[in-house]
Length: 107
Image (tube, rainbow, N blue to C red):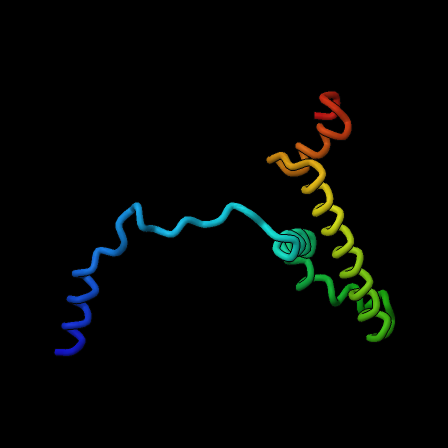
């Protein structure tokens, strides 16, 4: 009986009116932007490539060093994109950056 009462009370509440709904912010902070860029760069390749890295590195220590070095380079790349986003505040991502820097010939 209690389960039936809970279901009825859930159905009876239609939720907030459209004017009372919470709107999402349309902004991304530095940490969020870096996380998105790093996720795009690394992608799913991180799950495929450890075997190749270990085969070519020869030791586990060197393989871990290569992974850390690659992570550092990726973090620096994401900070460069953050600087571009601040310097060129336009929508369009890479296309907006390239056309702003090189002009209409590149785009």
